[in-house]
Length: 277
Ligand code: SF4
Image 1 (cartoon, rainbow, N blue to C red):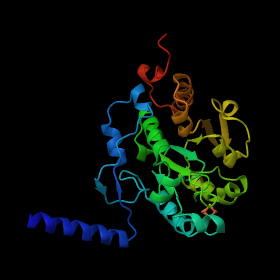
Image 2: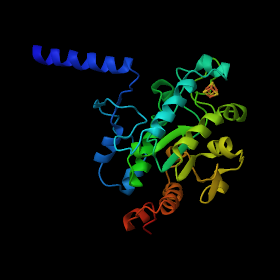
Image 3: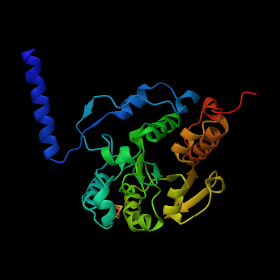
Image 4: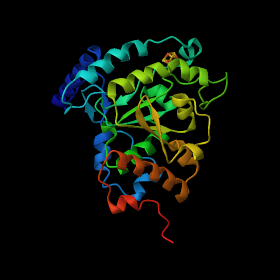
């Protein structure tokens, strides 16, 4: 036991040292996703995924071990510092726990964009970590990716404040998103993904100023900064509307993304959420 306690102390000291050096630590959600079996239709069911395991990786969140160069990671790291200290929206600075910059692979060919951090994201400092985020991870896995193959960010980097005494999350205002959009634009400029996916009509409003229902926006390609942009429903919508039809709509949008990226698509994947009758 003494040896074990000593080893544990050593690990804690090492991790503390790494934190002081600015290295972020997190559980390996991606490795869990890979272990979560071959993608199946059930993988998109909105049942909660296992919460990240206590496995600790001592590498930057936005770094990928096999990245050919660190140029994009370095540029993202340079951008990250001023964004984390941003005070352009004083009302959000007052209420936020922290700025939620973004997470994932700086070399990602695919980038998901949401509207703003919610309560869970504000607390954890990472986008899409609540129930909707767990469902997004299942969608990513069903597409044949791991979560850390992708880059995920929001248009608004700080959680929208709530009126005193009210809980929950509110939709970001157009002016708030416009103030913060340059940061996302820079992230996209650095990463240069081959495709973007906007999650929800509010994210589309933030990106393109498109104030239209998702039913009209989804299922077709748009463009942001010269990069193909697909719009689809926010995973939170699927948590509220669990019909096969709505799941299939999102899945068809993801099939269009996979086709655009020339990814292999199995017959099984093509058949997800099709009515058996
Ligand atoms: S929402 Fe964006 S622009 Fe506003 S304070 Fe946060 S990081 Fe800065």
